[in-house]
Image 1 (tube, rainbow, N blue to C red):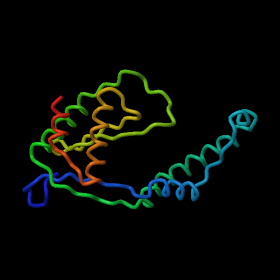
Image 2: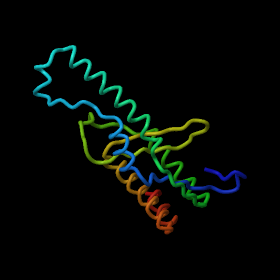
Image 3: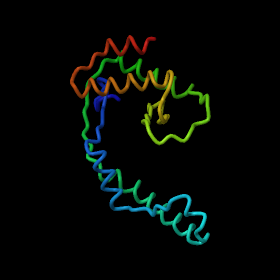
Image 4: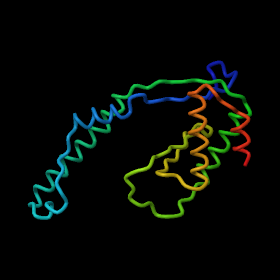
Length: 165
């Protein structure tokens, strides 16, 4: 993004310093009803529906409350026009041209990444669970940039050479 005077580009990184603690606290406040799958079929339909309604409401409360519990730390770094331009173009091109090659499988582990950029007056975003191929390479680059920024070791020339590939 540009600074408030529109003079230079800034890279803004937001860290959730208490992610796991916030999840635990939100979970403790919002308990769902867990019934083993083999017992569900023997329960009356109206009871199963009540449990499902309850769990859906709890799930909704959990995701509503979770962001309120986050402690967010923001780091801002001035970056070159060249790096900002290349990163923006790569991100926009990637999001616009992303093609799903397989139907997603149900996966309960791994990590999610969200690529986001602004194109004209629109925010474009793409979320991927366990990125692979080019998505994994771009994810690795973004994660490296964040890690280096946190460690105060940004190396724009390294990132630009990766973005040029």
